[in-house]
Image (tube, rainbow, N blue to C red):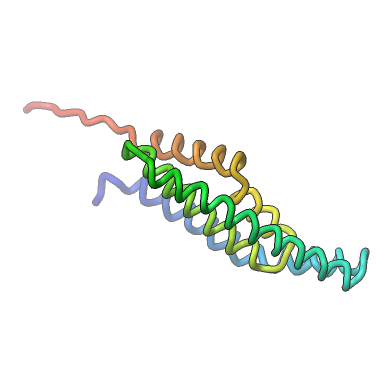
Length: 141
């Protein structure tokens, strides 16, 4: 597909950035956990990690029920795709909340809490619409 090379390059660069981020994030999170442990103590840090896990489980359960209910009453294809995207973000946020670390917990909460998740979904939809707008030009010989 010669005509789609720039699009393929953009996808490749996004995937490369995502892979680098996913490889670097555990090390940064571990460093931050060690720093926090050194400043406030092991037991307190462990308590914070458990607290964020418990709060995360509560929010994931609550928000998943809300999205599931919205998915059941969705009428248009746009609403269905938005609700599916929201559901995927809740799952991703829940997975991030399961992993110990303050950065992953912060990102997980952003993906799980309703008002931040909706803003992220709207931004993703806007980007997808920008990328899907294309024009076809036909010339006769």
